[in-house]
Image 1 (cartoon, each protein chain N blue to C red):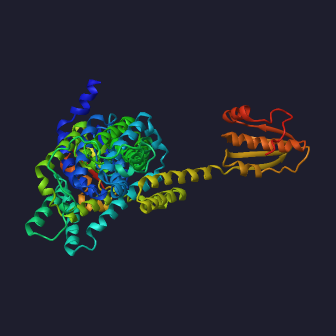
Image 2 (tube, rainbow over the protein chains, first blue to last red):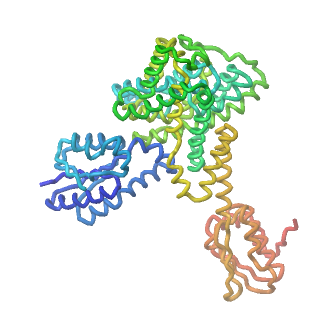
Image 3 (spheres, each protein chain N blue to C red):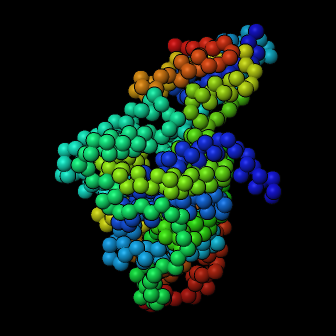
Length: 139
Length: 486
């Protein structure tokens, strides 16, 4: 059974769909727990700090992005916790996934920025290549 | 205490050394280019970058942040250098340090929160525009080859990082294009045309300026502007590094540290500097977290200059221009355009005004000051709207809604109908707050004016703060008080 589920999200529609799949996986076992991981991208840090009055306001803004996802999990009656990490999304998710023991990693197929993806390659692609646990990509 | 020092210095040795080397490589072109902006010899910026980076490593409040010669500071120095020369710049740098140390001691960092977001966004945008404008004379209308070199530099700095990130792309552009220019003997202006590079360590020197009041009056305005802008950019950068690393920092210690760094740097022939947003981001992304990375960056930079000094003067100007264009594009806050659409009108105006004033005056400090004043005025204008609803119940009932203070007093006084006689009048302050003696004075006037016509006035609903002010300052309490005649 999938007991330790890692759900990597960025606040996009795709990650909301990923959250729904995570709920389905989690409902298979009574002991399952979902860890929501959100990476605050280094490249956005300057912009986000500049546009927030304080670090508290910025934290709040980020948590707000996760709200629909938290609601989905809460509605599915799933135990979950939230981890906000800082870094470059792909490598940071991989590092976190490989450091802790997870039975499966769930991630949306595509994030927020289509243009960036064309040049840099998608985060989900990197995660599939480098994560040690099974990965579920949600379209 | 010892443990803290140990983690700040040696908690991340490998990452810090690697990141420090990357930063040193990325610093060289910027330090030279900012010297050229300021109108001084490249060595002034290079010595400054060495000295500031090394000193900040020891006395800064934000480990992982990189400080050196910066564009924001260089832009402020231009008129001083042009009119009075380098020695006055060094004296101004020392005084800047003194002012920043004082700011740090008096914990001025807290004042940062009074600088609105719109002004900060305007600040970085204006900075980006000025850095770009400073490049124009170095590449427009020189020759076609210059344009080609700028274009190739831009292509390298934007395309290479997609495939290869171990060495900073600006350095690749610098090495490849300098080599090409030397080899082919192209007719391009070089760093050597604008200054000389000396392959020596900086030495301690007192600035050669007369020690009198006149000198002080010349450098003081510049030093004040440098101190304010330096702290502004440093504290913004500290916030960014705080966010990226998820760790807090000591902003007052950082202010003091910036001051100490500038103070010492002035004696070693360097120009004033501050924290660098771009370099700090490069540092953190390259794995730098501790104090060691800034130290390594400074030392390695100096080492490179001593070893490679005679190559540095052969760097073609268009390559530096290309790198500076990249810096200005990176500095500009591109989300400002959506901000302009979404933000309240007053904020958009403040942001645009800040940019416009800076671009017009070429002085970031004036722009920031004007922006802060403008947003303060907008704020007062917004908050000074006061409403008084009149209701006829048993007697006349006035409900005051809003903030009663010096700016809203006039509106407040006009809202009452004083023509009545012998009535019961109730003024309800439940939805209002009185802030100052002008506010209390206004209540006095209203009450006494009504009483003149034998109305019975009662004030209700004052909150604790307003009540306290009324008790202290108001005169209407004593039943037979007269309207002050003035």
